[in-house]
Image (cartoon, rainbow, N blue to C red; front, side):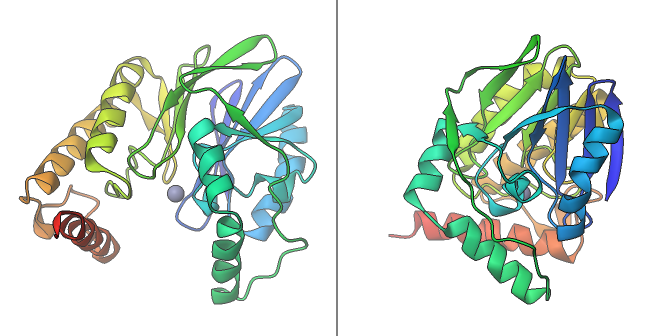
Length: 262
Ligand SMILES: [Zn+2]
């Protein structure tokens, strides 16, 4: 697991699997953990890492309900979990889904964990809206399209955007819920990206503004081509063209043709 400081109040850790990111943000005597690393040893290290860095842990947030972002409670078992209203609804509508996906992953990789995942008290946050942290406020923006739910989190005093599964430098867009919603999310994120010092994607390293802006243009072009039936595996964005990205692209095409079939 890698830890990178992108601001005096913001640390990003990157899991060894899928380079899933978790972000710790501090204001005054409070700090939130946004999303989570995946492996048991990485989760176990988090409380010590926060303490050493002087980030007094106070709560959990998750950008969306995909299971690999929801594991914060394994590191901080008594903490409340704040999510967008859309994510709270998805969790309510599919109880046990995250736990089943986690169990499946753990069985496939022969992993054991000290305790099962219990999401505990899930707090639904109004999005768009604000969420207080210490002396400051986080700004919440709807971010759906990859999944049916989710939010991006803007940290105004650090100019850091934690965007969930968008703008990944290592993964092509996966519009699991809707291409149009995904494009609308990119349009909502665009003005934030334009003023961000760093953009933290759900997978891959934090991006400085010029790289994030370029990625947003690439992702929009890919999605528009996908929607028009013009996206080709051989023309995937440079750096995101390997076998796994081609597999994700094939799944995007298959999902789209399933959606338009009678
Ligand atoms: Zn993800």
